[in-house]
Image: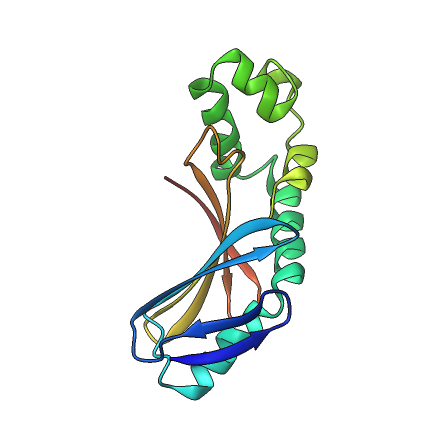
Length: 163
């Protein structure tokens, strides 16, 4: 078990022998989960890369939100994610979460800007590092996640809707 100091989350413990690590951290009084999946943490270079990505958390949030805002009118995934909540939540919950009563009155760009800080998942597949930046419109009312997928250089490569 190693102790590592992060820019935004202070000291975290990572078991370098584990195939899955879940870091329960806090930023701006909000609970955040950062997961490392299938990361060969015994590989010092790979772990160093993951820690440097974690240290860019605020920048990653800004990149992800900007990408969602720029794509919210053209991405079926993003549109469906929000529309799904209007179909699943009751009228009072919709009003509380989105501040409007109907999807026609909904402003995706504003809502995306107001989303809370995301959880993150760093994983390795085919020896490539992948980052998923995971947002929820409401932890109280929904377990649906809008994921912004990024590569190791923080380029947005895709969006997905998961639950």
